[in-house]
Length: 131
Image (cartoon, rainbow, N blue to C red; front, side):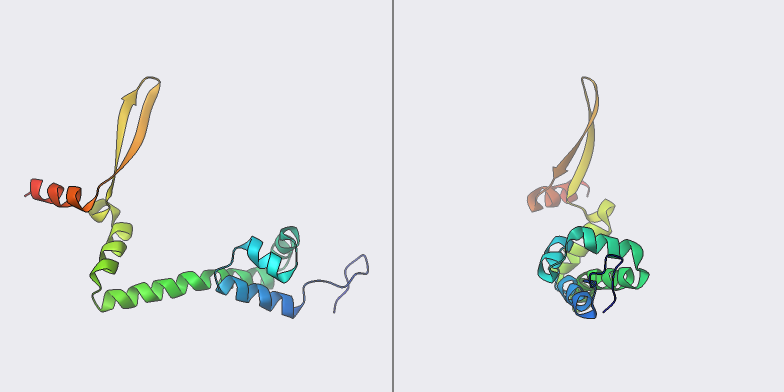
């Protein structure tokens, strides 16, 4: 175990680093992971800012749940899951498929942006109106 300048043993052991990785891979936040690993957020961010290997390991482990979700979504798209297809399209092709519409209106003192969310009834009526 390495020693810090003040003679105390470092908290950054392989066991702590691995525990943090597992927490992030399970979807924990930094606060939750630090609590489980019994380190402060300040310590965590000091390690992130001073240790490139640690920073890279934490980044990879934090991205893991997103990567799994993306794989699951793509697999569902491949088997033609219509609900996933709608969800994907609404987020990836917003101009064509989003259920939200943004409008700017003139109000005293400037322009205000408002988002409208269309329900399925509005969306089907909108599609019929454009035919």
